[in-house]
Image (cartoon, rainbow, N blue to C red; front, side, top):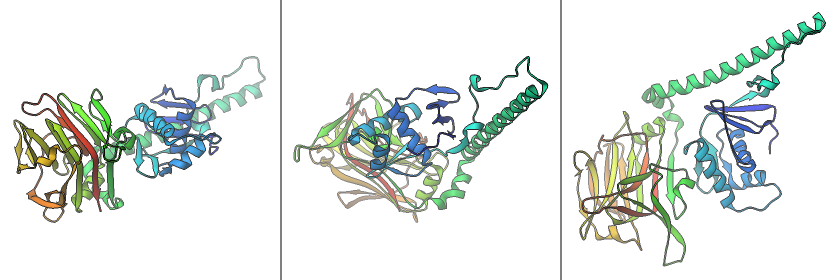
Length: 373
């Protein structure tokens, strides 16, 4: 690994000290195993660069052959410790840290009590004066480190306090967006969060090719996976054409694939899959409360075809600011403008809900993709 033991890395509210192999959050230590620590340190040292999986594994396990699963396990542990969105997955490539990282010389980092120079008694005046000068320099270094951290916090707070203006200022930096859940991998390992962790989730096998290529989510109320979007990404999506694709099948209740471009920036677009007795529907949603209202309900028996999930798409036209619904490449509805209810900063969402007489919601996902070019 790169030798930067004389440097402390700050990615607020976290701080990682390579020399002491210590990770803290707001001064509180976070316990990590050695390889978990090494994985995080590599990502932090690269400060936002996507680090390839092979590169990570070669540096963290230099003398040992390991599978992708070992790295995925480390990433999963780190997400639980830091938060789901601190480490971003780039499918087919690797991972990167999403928080801005500031490198601080170790001598400027707040010191442990046992490292603080103390004045001694019984010394010659010249020796005591030297120690006093050292103490003053140490205090100045701590003050400078604190100022660096405060400046970083102010920068982050300012960005969050005026999200729309900040997004417009930086939207030109966004060139494209691609977020996807693919196959039978755990969405958590692909960079998604799970809104309510207490849920039934599992990988499912494809009987046609014996591979595990889909993911099942079951809930007795409502639950969903999510991947947040920055304000700049939301602004970018509203200024360009985009597609929300869901290759999925409903077992019971209702399921959904959504893109929320709010709050305060754009609408929320929901594509619902519904079971009503023996009938199944696809419906762009325009109201959630006090009761569902749909732009249009399209009956389609294929919604329940778990063995061979169909392709459902919302295609957004930035000129008209409306979306159209496509099933297996055929246009089925148009003119959908989304809605503004229950807008939170969840970005891309897909999940299940209980609906009507069904006490549970259960839906199977083979692919969910949000792409903006």
